[in-house]
Image (cartoon, rainbow, N blue to C red):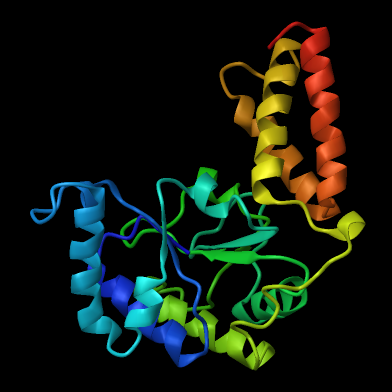
Length: 251
C-alpha cells in the first residue's frame, strides 16, 4: 500500500518488484496532484495519466497496476485490513520497530486469518507519526546510519523479497481463508470507529486533554494492538461506547 506517492515512475517500479516476488495486490492512497494532471481533467483521467507513466517502469507488471485499488485516504484504504505494518526509517517514541524478516514472519502467520497490509510513506517525508498510529507495527530496514534514505521501490523490493522467503506461496494463497467467526481479527474500520466513539466519550468525561487528545489515545491504541482483539470483541467495546454516548446524550 503506497501512501500518496509523488512519482509515477516509483509506482511502476514498485509494481515490478511485487511481480518479481509473486505479490499482486497493490493499493494507492492518491496524492492531490492526481486531480491536477493536464490530461483527463478529473480524478479518473488523472489516474489514467499516472498509470500510463507508471507502465514505463513497470515493464511486464502492468496487470498489477491495472488491478490497483485507489483510495482517497489511509483510513479508507486500510478499512478491511486486520493487521497493518507501517514502514519508517525514523525512531518513533513508544514504537519498537521490527525487522523486514520479522515482518515477513508476521505476515506469513497473519495472512491466513485475514487481510494484512504493509504501508509505505510518500517519497519526501515518509509516514507521519499520526499515520504510523494507524498501524499495529512499524518496520525499519537496517540501512547504514550515515545514509538511511531508500528509494520507495528499493524498500518495497527488500520487503517483497523477505515476504517471498517466508511464504513461498504468497500471493493468491490465504486471501480466502475461512477463520471461525469468534476468532476473526478485528478489521481496521471497526477499530477506527471505536476510537472515534471513545474519543468523544472520554473527551466529554474530561479524561482527555482537549488541547492534545491524541496523546493519550495513542497509548490506548498501542495497548489494544498488543491485545490483538477479535472482531467480536471490538464490536462489544464499540457497543459499550455507543451506550455511554447515549447515556451522556452526546449523539
